[in-house]
Length: 188
Ligand SMILES: Cc1cc2nc3c(=O)[nH]c(=O)nc-3n(C[C@H](O)[C@H](O)[C@H](O)COP(=O)(O)O)c2cc1C
Image (tube, rainbow, N blue to C red; front, top):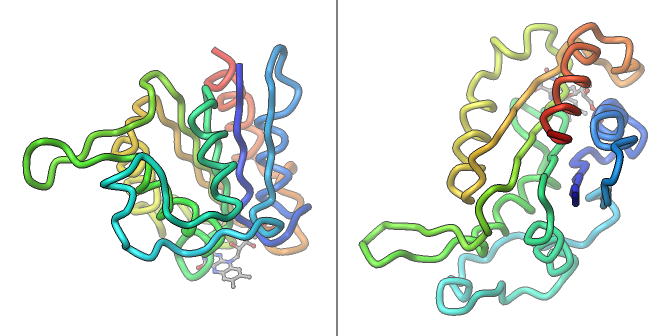
């Protein structure tokens, strides 16, 4: 099984990274590709719509290898801290660029995923607000919607709140609950 994990935090050993690693590492028979997006050069989508005439993005940068990894992965695991109530710009740039993984359908405003069916999607968010789930419910809605748009129907989205820069996410009760659940979801 192939797992792709993308860390949208600029902190490579922060809460999000620790959580992502715990969820994706130590699986049996898993080929894991883990990227700190801060190390990659991924430009913003330019809305050129080249990807609707071709099965590729016009921009050639580190997203080229992420496209390949997404296509090959059985599970795609995204992680980001919340910045001003949303995912970081590092993760959002990747998400926007995955517009290239969706084609126009025959009908107006119809979109057809280019990804093969059966993939799993996971998104985990960390945040300072101890009531992150209640404060930012739209994040879950958005990422369930995002994965569905991309043709990924088996999805889990989780939020771990109450985390400062100096916190250790692995001591959080919520993190301790969701880590085994998400590991099982990815491994099943
Ligand atoms: C620029 C910035 C904006 C933030 N905005 C929010 C926010 O809107 N809501 C929140 O609950 N926490 C916010 N936080 C706190 C982080 O989401 C939280 O500490 C997170 O766990 C950090 O993850 P990391 O250790 O992976 O970088 C913000 C932190 C920074 C640096």
